[in-house]
Length: 180
Ligand SMILES: [Fe+2]
Image (cartoon, rainbow, N blue to C red; front, top):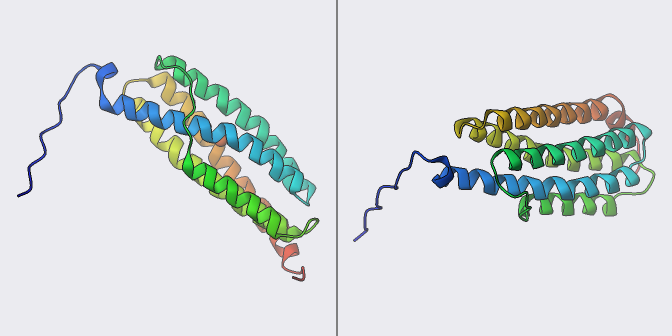
């Protein structure tokens, strides 16, 4: 016979709340993801064919460094030590991006199309993570942390849009003509 789950214990104290623990866990996850992504983006920039894509990825690297320091401020606000916990999802996405570079020819725009695809998959993971983190920060009453997370969320969405524009306006139409 199935036993009925006990109702969860509740607390008014944020420090004791299970939701705060989950929030901090998610912070550690994205902290790991950002730190590894900054290295992966540098590699993608080096492998890119077009200057447009390389410039966009290089700018993005400094943006990511900024996002890492924003996360450190968030850890401080919620009075937790900044630490990273391996993000399996981002590790997988980074591995995929390396596979795309290996599987495409150096100096082709087809490679750039692949790099954009890989970078956008990373962006979408970040957009989902920062959206949740921003909302949880405000639920838990950390308004300043929510503001910082919102800033990063807006940047991530902007980068995603920029990558779409680069692909659609120049890279995809030219890549279409390349032979396999
Ligand atoms: Fe980011």
